[in-house]
Amino acid sequence: MSDFSGGPPSDFAPALPQGFDRWTRRPVRYLPVVLNGQLMGYLWASVGGNAAGYLRHVAVDDDNLTCPGFWNDRLDQQYRQGLSAEVALRQWAGVPEDPRCGGVPPHAQELEASTKQELWSVLNPTATPMDPGPWIQDGEFPSGTPEDRSKGWSAPVSVTPATYASNTAAEVRYYPVTKSGQLLGFLWAAAGEQSAEYLPLASAGPAGTAAAGLWNIRLSDAFSQGIPALEAIRRFRRYPPDMLAGVIGTEAHEQSAASLSDLESIAGQG
Image (tube, helix red, strand yellow):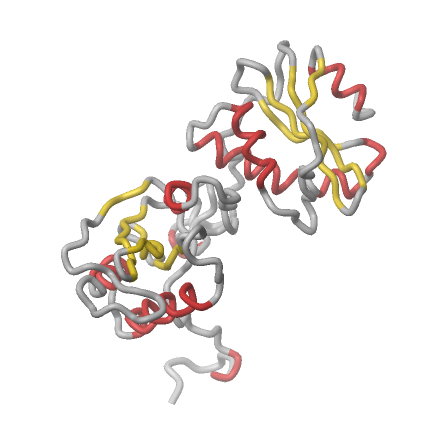
């Protein structure tokens, strides 16, 4: 019998999660996964949260399906047994190695990284940096506002995440952002200052404006990690194409403008 009357039938009830979240903004604890003495990747779990997963060592394992699926399935089985993310992580220390995907050594040292993205960069320093992930993580928006309104919020609260300054009097360096050969706008950073932003090309219309969302999230994420503005946009050259935000093409070169107003004129925004 239902615990309530007048509600929707059980067939329409929201599906319960079957495993740990794969994204978190919290610090992560992690353990090495090795095979025959070679580092295959890391198992990680959010500190005090509900996220856990596996990150592969790209230089050793170029298969993005087999071992991530293997380890994530193992972790999710423990989720269904009621284990927390951190406890699930530690359960695998000393379990015999899988012949394809390895295992966690019995006396492996548990370490901590400030973010999942940082852990990826440590493990794969020459690979494409990891995106910030979905807008909602750990049940919260980037501002810390809970997604669940029952936790004291009567309405959504919009807070602009901290990011680089959007104005500068200094020289600016910039890269063109394109999608399927169309110029959408420019990603710029001030030389020697913590100023950076995405500037849409006026003639690109809605496509140029739509690209701003993801680029500005990426900038905010880099800012929160303390990355200098110019270094941040240079890192973005390695990001893969996005269906809305486009990409900084591999053939794109860093360019300079004497001022932000000069770049705005180039973009048709002046």
